Image (tube, rainbow, N blue to C red; front, top):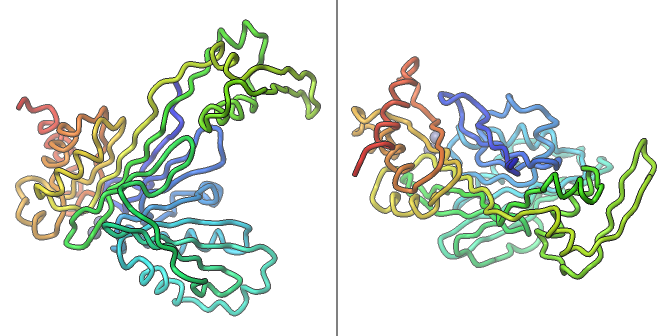
Length: 337
Ligand SMILES: [Zn+2]
Ligand SMILES: [Zn+2]
């Protein structure tokens, strides 16, 4: 089974946080946090459709400018989400530049910004051609944990405590469509882009009785076309299994309230990305700075029963001590109750 999402941290664990999540077979990606983005090519950056920012401390938000720059002058929409007060921070960034030339751009770029509150979301549009002035009214929506939903996945969030509100994030795939190679062979069907269309039809729960056309081409011309009943084709060439879950937790104090929320949000995740800013011997500093220790990160990975975890956001004071951080977290993750 090839996972649909291939998350990767954008920097080494001592540098700015950020998780880049490209989609398999699609020119698209999501992003959790954006610290310095220099490791990503403009091509990678242009795939991004949604960014979820945990909080606006500089190391998590400085990449905004880099991303904005590659999107300028393009026909694009970028949706970014952040904690309370996010409009103020985004508007402050936008106010830092002069926009007298943008009305000459041929294409239009729209920035959609959503502020997440404990009981509601507020969304505003900022249009490039309009010099990024806030457009229209704020749109109010309910918030009960889900920030974004599409047929094949959703993004869940929890407001955690970093002395300021900080978002914990999970990307959850609804289910996974696995293609049976043997089934394809029996029907004499080649692999190709039509499989994406087929998967999409399943994710969007299209009527199984509907027609599904398979067409394949060679050198740009369609050489064969065949019509199937969608449900029947699905039974022959696909199996459905649980989807992927990716959780991202950073910049939180190891308090009982945060523990409870993180364990729920990260429950049984396939991959947990979690900060391990300090070693347990510096627990007092971790508390004062509202960060987790490596021991706490390991403990949370264990309590949430995740399949795999990756640590990041190490304090620079442990330069050359990454192994100790990993070891401390692993001991906590493996500890018998
Ligand atoms: Zn922070
Ligand atoms: Zn940070």
